[in-house]
Image (spheres, rainbow, N blue to C red):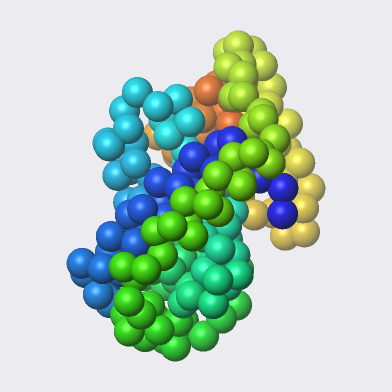
Length: 194
């Protein structure tokens, strides 16, 4: 799996929070949006962290899962859940068994391997595409083009009418440089990703 510097930075932070939970709050879970919000509180001056959104968390959790699997550790990423309190749709394992394995495991022995793994990712990481701010005109065009493309889908995923508050939030994300699909999903379907 190709990783970017953004993936490495965010994966490292999310891993630290999940590890802390596994050690200190056995059996607890954390919502995707809470992971992102905590990182943004703890690292307010980090541009990578500031640009993080819950909708993109899956790849970073998969990186953590891949590390755990590669070292025969329980899947620490199973502690991160959506707004419904369960893993996202792409989660394919037995969640109850993985949670029990995380609770039973002695997490005091993993620090050295994790550090080496992250260093390997850093060396191999491709530069992440930088978010490029859009002009108001380009933002509107991207919004309309994406919404119209969805209307042609069978069936369309988005509602025919979007509340002004939601539309403003979507436009704000698109203006910051986020992909329109990510912006629409994050605002219209927050329960799926947060």
